[in-house]
Image (tube, rainbow, N blue to C red; front, side, top):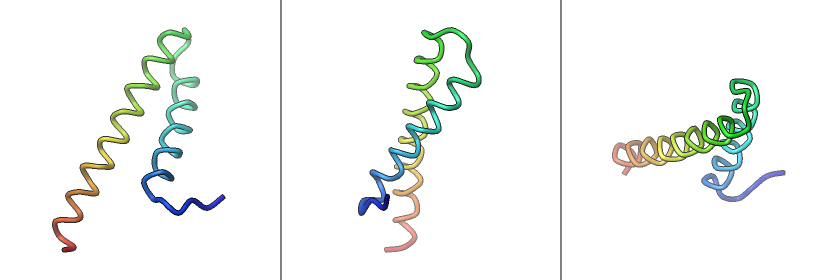
Length: 59
């Protein structure tokens, strides 16, 4: 599956990684959901900030 949007691909990848890491690292369901959501937020925001930072040097 190849997506045309890099942002959508990154968000999909972040979602899968967060789900797997939450299942591996936390034992209770509520803790898994909280950990996955916070990790997903950090990954997406971090990628957007890094992409914006790279854009400054390219253009």
